[in-house]
Length: 126
Figure 1 (cartoon, rainbow, N blue to C red):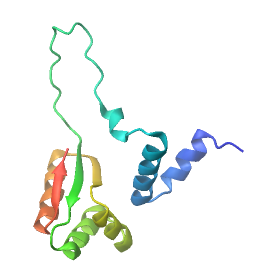
Figure 2: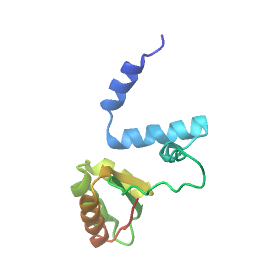
Figure 3: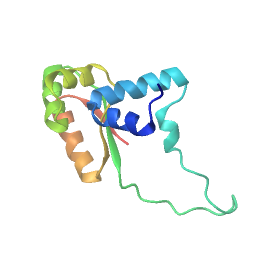
Figure 4: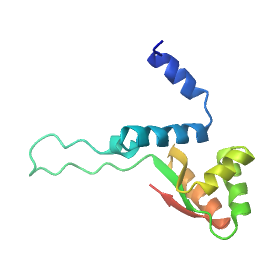
């Protein structure tokens, strides 16, 4: 029996953040694609000679790239920032690079980055 799109979306909505991350990784591997490809900007309307005005970025993603020398403090910081349980936070820290927050404001991204770096982690904001 084939699942409907609605059933698939409902199943994904009930997953934890870590389950969704693992699902995305499995889909990328199975289908030979990357989720980042969907983010590529569409070509500007008009000729190549016209320069499109640069839009200011309003949504940011926080990516944990390294947990550094103090993994326990970073796990605690990840739990505080994301609300994940201990096991999920530990898996996120050990599975770097890990997207911790997506589509957040610049101020919130800076706050999250500072908290994680204060705990000893290396973080990128995209």
